[in-house]
Amino acid sequence: MRLRKSVQLALNILFHSKLRSWLTIIGIIIGIGAVVAIVSISEGAQRTLSERLGGLGANIITVSPGFSRARGAGFGGGPGGPEGGGTSLQGKNLTSRDITVLKSIPNVDYVLGQVSDRPSVVFSAKTATLSVTGVDTSVWKDITTSTLSSGRFLLQGDTYSAVIGANVANSVFGKTIALNNKITIEGKSFNVVGILSEGSSIYIPLAVARDVLPNVGQTELNSIQVKIANVDLANDTMNLITSKLMLSRGILQANKQDFSVSSPTSFQQTIQQTMNALALFLGAIAGISLIVGAVGIANTMFTSVLEKTREIGMMKAIGAKNRDILLIFLFNSGLIGLVGGIGGIIVGVISSETISSLGGIQLTGGGRGAFGLGGTSFVSPTILIVAIVVSVGIGMIAGAIPAYRASKLNPVDALRYE
Image (cartoon, rainbow, N blue to C red):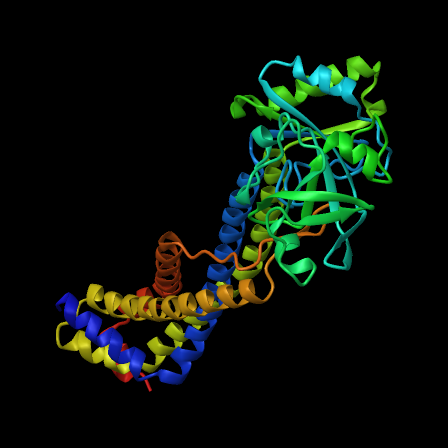
């Protein structure tokens, strides 16, 4: 019997046992669909995470006050990003002395000290409470990952000048703030010299911030950003920063450490490990659906063999070989897996896109809002190919024993079967 004929007979068996076969196929569709959706959402989330953390600057290391509430380079746009440098619940214990120590460490290019507060800002007779960050104008433009939509960054010599985020310029006050417009911060007038492409913060010179912002002292810093030359040495540099600062502060025991050193890279690794663990757990649950589907295929094939016993006997009587019977039922089970795999891919792609657009993943940013990974579904060709191979493989493996039993039926006994 030719291979083509075996395929035709397998299709005939599939089409003439519609209800039973399609109920089995639905089980495969659910399992494959769940796996495709989980893998697509997980891979898309990791890609988005890498892109957004990449925007924060993989070459940026952040030193923050306090140890238990360490934060990375910031979720709002990194060093000098939309949310600036945050404060610690354990006090403001960073000073210019720490900046001096950091500048002496190998692999360090720039060091930026920052202070921040949320004062009242007035524009066009409207008042809003916004994040205002004071930055060292001599290095800010060299270390920030923010980009300008118009104007310029703060420069040395600027006093009452400000650079604002796009949201501040376009949305906060219900009226667009243009370059060279004046905004008032705590009663002081500032000239807008630059507008960033995104963000909801305002940046002013560090020295002016110490005089204007009510909750900012004359020596303390809210955070210090360090730009390194070689990203490959990031972990070594972080360890060196920790040891140098502990030495300069006279800290001899690790449990006495009163500052934190972090980077987007370490944060990314932690989140990816968490997402991988979650994806593995959900994948295991989806795998149960595939096992149930495989049992359904085996049950369908055993039933099909019983129903076709007389037909098997007739085919053997007219010359069909054991191998021909085996191929017919293997192809039949493989076709069930193939149809289920195609349906599962369709369901999985639609589900992943729907879940991503409706929910997404939100990572809290230490009190500075949420770092969103919404709309993160990514369906790669590899996922689709693996889904098809797995579904067909499950079908053929589940149908192997029934197909083998069918091929070993005695023609005489098969013809007598009622």
